[in-house]
Image 1 (cartoon, rainbow, N blue to C red):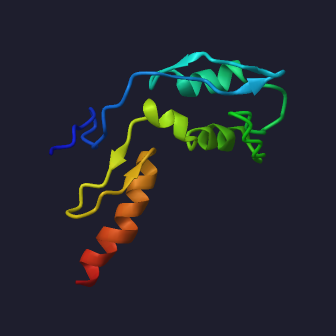
Image 2: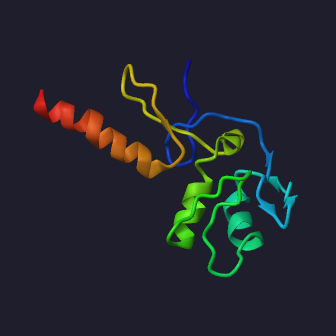
Length: 119
């Protein structure tokens, strides 16, 4: 089965178009509808509180040193898999998927490009 490509030519899997924001603040779940187009801006704008960089997603509680690290961390929560594009390795026999292009690039360099140079 062919994997569709995004406008840059990278592979991605088509998934449902939205999920709910599970960030809890003041004892209430946000529940804003998140899409692939708006979730990063939503996290950055709707949930910016002072200088606290603690993940409030569904009780996670991870504390990070910088705001940009929190935004990157938020993408690791599996509930966002519904809306987040996947970058898929197209190397024969490899089925790895990444939520970010840099993860795919790092994987390809470490696992496939280095092996091809050695062979």
